[in-house]
Image (cartoon, rainbow, N blue to C red; front, side, top):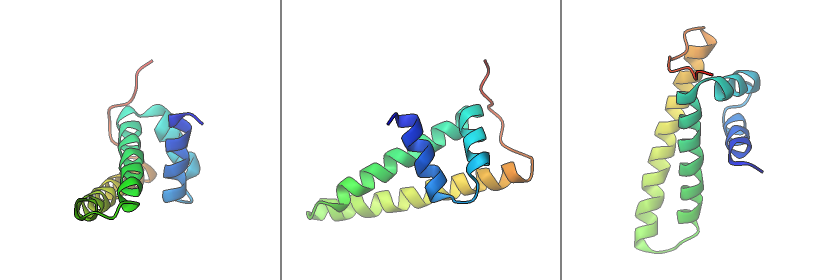
Length: 94
């Protein structure tokens, strides 16, 4: 599975009920795509640290948990703005 498809599926699963909006934004808006990719990377890192049992792992797990929540709020805000027809700029150009 390509990274783009993996990222898109993760976002659609994490923010259910908005699949068409997410897919369109993901394909059309570079800033949204980058935000989603950051979310996927953070999600993966969180799960890597979760499997470890050191003191550092515990700290890192908390850091990535906080970061994932922050990125999730950014995505949620982006989607809410897009639903009200005022999406952020930075559209991809062909």
